[in-house]
Length: 106
Image 1 (spheres, helix red, strand yellow):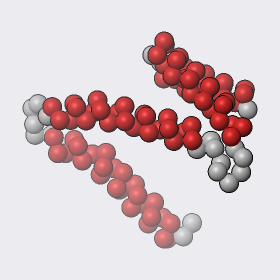
Image 2 (cartoon, one colour):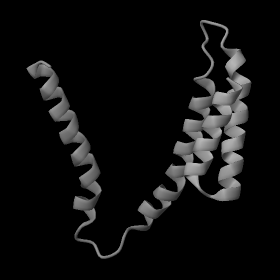
Image 3 (spheres, helix red, strand yellow):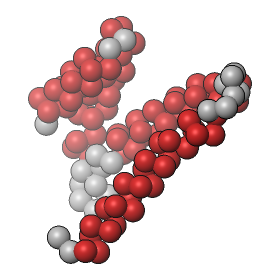
Image 4 (cartoon, helix red, strand yellow):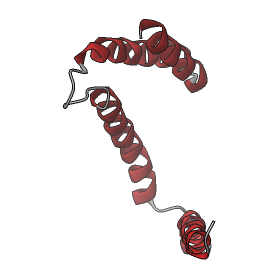
């Protein structure tokens, strides 16, 4: 690896560490967590999951080539994953079973 690549990795690592530590540094002197953070934690989690669901379903479709044959498998696997998560409340089981359904259908 070149020096430039090592420096890029070092800068990216420093930025990630800073972004992970920033909330703790910002709120370290407060005794009570602001209500806005609880609200954002509740709302942004659902928004991020919804965005990932839409992205994962529609990333299966290749618009240049006829990729619609993968869409039903991805949709069914997503439904299985959501159903198992609703019933079991265990993300590991849901993700593994949804992935297995997708791979078996493909």
